[in-house]
Each structure stands twice: as structure tokens, then as C-alpha cells.
Length: 245
Image (tube, rainbow, N blue to C red; front, side, top):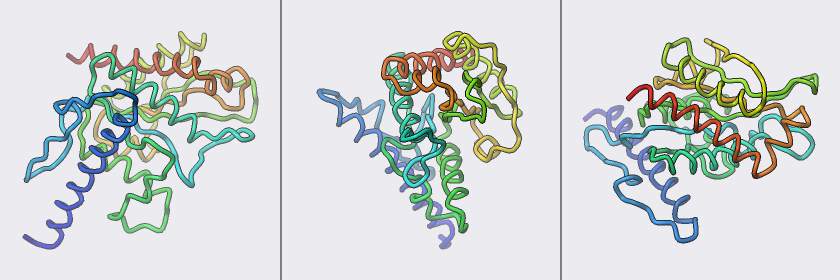
């Protein structure tokens, strides 16, 4: 086998092991939580080692050195992670197989050893889309927090690929979040976002609210309101997946 092929196989094994360890570590950290092998352990195949049968991959925006947008001491990366964990738990309770691409405060760019780029930002985004393409989930949702110059701007905005399935997913999630926020925003198509451009699975970016708006900021930071946001996102995801059965 040639060196490039050996390298590709090695990287696939690393990705599979890393994601399996991430899920197992998170589950083991919960008091009294059991880890069902059939659900969490990856099926490793010699020809194509990867985690299979994943319904939802949650892309947790930013992390580590990349804090994302901010308001005072509040950092987007922390809000993204908190709501992502609640979304993960909500979808799990509904019976879906779910993975998160980060469970703690670190940058995914540090795990990208394959892309020859000086840009930490590009390496981070490339790692996220690469993981998605290796895992092949039914869908991927990328969780973020918005900001605006005017503090009156509020509500959630879902951005989608120029693909029918991504648009349908975006409409389902947007409708659920509109009901929560009391808004009437429409999903936004985009050809320019790296994650949307290079991820093969139906993918949406969920801007969960504006950190610059007082009411949104309260919802994004209070534990009970975070749960309500997570439940709305999960409801939109479930509606989409049920339609695809």
C-alpha cells in the first residue's frame, strides 16, 4: 500500500477513535450513566473505519482560542457548548443516535493534522466538515450565537445549503425557534459558509439568538431557557427526520 493510502487509513482510524472516546467520556462523566455498546461504540471496518448509523451530528461552534462573538464576559463558545449538550440529551431521549464534535473547551483546529494551511480558522472549519463527511450522519446542525450593531435585533436565524434537504431541515428548525421567540424569521440560503459548502450531509447553521439583545441574552444564558432552545431545535430536527422515514 502506498504512503498516501496508509496515511488516509490512519487518519480514519484516528477520527473514529477520537469520536468514540469523546462520546464515551461524556457519558461516563454523568452520575450513574450506562453506556449501551450498540449505540456508542463505533463499527470499525478495515476498509472504511467510521462511526455508522448516526442520525445527528452536532457541530459545536468555536472553542478553545476561538471564543466567537462576545458580550462583556460572555463568550459564544461557552453558550454553544451548554445548549449543544442540552440538545444532545433531548435528542437522545427521543431515541436518536447523536454525536457532538466537541465536548469541552478546545479548538478543533488542533486536531487537524492533515490540512496544509497556515490559517487556524480554515483548519478548524475543514476539520468540522471532514468529520461530518467521514461519519456520514443523516444531518448536521451547527450551533452558534449571533450579534448585531443594534440591540433591538433578536430571534433565531437558520442558514442552509442550496440543497432541498438542507432547506427543508432549516424550515423545520426555524419554525420551532420562531414559535419559541415569537418571531417570523425565514431561513437564509448561503453558498459562502465553509461548513455548508463542504459538508456532504444536509447541514444547517443555527444562529440561536443575539447576544447583543437583552431578552435573547437572557434566554441564551439561563439554564432553563437554554433547555427550551435545545428542545425547540430538537423538535425541528425530529420533524425533519420523521418526514424522511
